Image 1 (cartoon, rainbow, N blue to C red):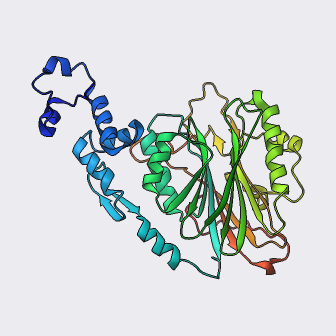
Image 2 (tube, helix red, strand yellow):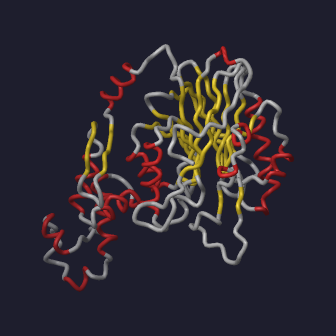
Image 3 (spheres, rainbow, N blue to C red):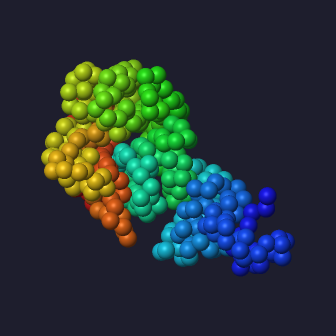
Length: 379
């Protein structure tokens, strides 16, 4: 069956069915639905991607298609035809090849930044604006490594378009899933594995990426452990799997394990935190203003009835230092504390966590931490 566009657009595009279909028939088809199908057909994308482009351009098919292809030609593009100007940086294969050769260096960076964030892709309210705000925060913070949880196909596609300076490594591509983002000019991926949780009823797994920054070797573990109090037993078993993975890392590798762990403090005890593994909120000074990452007293995205407003430290960052230590955390803060522009929604119902690391080299000796809060716009 032919896809029907609104009458004006069918005339513009020379629709051969124009003379066969009257206004009364056309009105039976929602115009937005027809535009979404046409966009997906022209660009070879899916309906989720189509909706993101069309909604931002007031459902103008021609502008949306042009914007899609402009953003993929390579280089820096300023798109002025949406709700607001967007700077889109893209690399074609030739440019990427040149960049990769230019960035080779024997001296590792002196510091890098890490973020973990459940971006709540399952909540459709203001989803595009919230996702765009997440992308802006990641760029503003000049982050090098990002762990995301609760990505869904449409936010995954949208973020890839907004953040081509990152390589995306995903744990899945269906329903909702996790991803690790690596800044292309500072962090290099050496391998990926996905460890399935055989006891999950929610499709959860452990996404593992081997990477390096200069000569600093990293084992990156991102997960979204089983949710809700009723699944504490499954969550503890999943935590044990992650801790065993950390312990199995080579002594010359720094392991960072983080994500939306849905943990209660007693479950960490049950999971038996290895003596060689550090909770970075604790290691960086246990600042109380950074304790609660799912805080319904401050974050209004979840409407909690009654007077009780739960505050929990669901999101955590653990590190097993290399021997001898080659990096040290200097700052632990929270992100996403302001509402997305033009909405009454925060970017997510979770606060994001940002950690600043200093590359100290093999001369560091014992593992060191600092509670310094400087150098970031995060709290």
